[in-house]
Amino acid sequence: MTENTRTPILAANWKMYKTSAEAGEFLRTLLGMIGGVEQRQVVIAPAFTALAAAASELEGQDLVTLAAQNMYFEAEGAFTGEISARMLQEFGVRWVILGHSERRHIFGEGNKLIGRKVKAALAAGLIPILCIGETLSEREQGNTLKVLEGQLEAGFSGVDSGDASGMVVAYEPVWAIGTGVTATPEQAQEAHGHVRDWLKKRYASDVAERIRILYGGSVKPGNVDQLMALPDVDGALVGGASLEPESFARIVQCETGRI
Ligand code: 13P
Image (tube, rainbow, N blue to C red):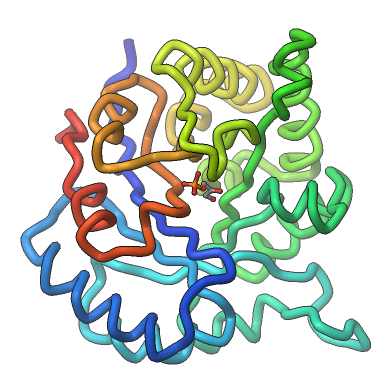
């Protein structure tokens, strides 16, 4: 077996929560709580309006970095309500969540659009966190792996192995998001293992071994250690439990079992 040298990522997706004042206060508290943490990357995805306050709070340290929750693939233009990679980078944003299930299911984003966003993010030097995941009915019909493959196919379309190795995939089963129902360790490892196998077929094995695959869906202080113990779970993308500093700090301090 190849040695696993993937640095774990603990990421907070704040969705449509927190003003800039609230974001600043959260980050001041969080930084005070996770001072000694090493060998992991902590990522915060605030609302666009809180990026400036978050960036100024995070100055002078490199443990916690910023992500955006979405972006458009064009550089600029008449696209009312959208935001570009360059606008995000002005605030030091390094990562961008793309294809989140709420974007897919509430706002109707399809695989093709998400694929274009991935390529635009990479071209701009942002790291895409590509979200994939099946709905409950897709799972019940036995289509989970097929759905994941379609989402991976579109998300990685036209992405060469140099870019792919830096990318992050987030497996977020739709039925586990905001529901309190977490995937069992068996379900999570099956999906993550399948994603890794798909990546091995699409790219070389060493590329696939470098790509971090995060789990998302009702991650909490009480289940994070168990999820992080799985061989192909390289981190967590956390919604609800990332909104309180105490709870997210505990998640950041999870046992990763990696050196
Ligand atoms: P919850 O942690 O609230 O289930 O949300 C998960 C999620 O959607 C993170 O992107």
